Amino acid sequence: MNSHPRTTHVLYLHGFRSSPGSAKSRMLAQRIAREHPAVTWWCPQLPMSPRQAMDMVSDGIRDWPRASMAVLGSSLGGFYATWLAEQGAARVVLLNPAIHAARDLATQVGEHAAWHDPDQRLCSSPGSSTNCGHWPVADRPCRSVITCLPPKGMRFSTGEK
Image (cartoon, rainbow, N blue to C red; front, side, top):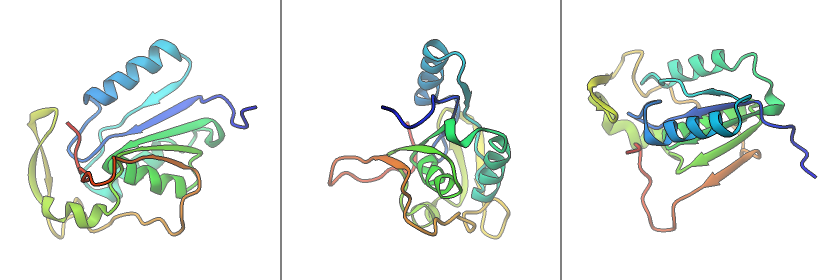
């Protein structure tokens, strides 16, 4: 017997330099719309600033029912999903999550093209409100997370293609 209520809301958090236009996001959105049309789907375009990203997501899910919502996070989105789990998000699934986001993204300060729209520029600079100096930190091991890790020996990626 399943102890969780039926999922009514799904939040998908994409990876660094990715977007709601990624193949993964589009595929998930289409499948949920086709097979679960009553489920609310949201995949926001996450700002470069971790603080801004988590403020936006927290505001967006403020009225969502925690017991029947699910969060899927890929790469950097997996790191964010872990933080959300620590804040009380119900069920979380991580796909190749970034584990040491601040360390791994320290070399990414500057201007970059978005993966799915090379004309879109993403900018992060030291000392600005968009830098990576304000990473959310989980203060205890997460107990509500299913993690899909790559096979042993494979490197983590901070972006999705």
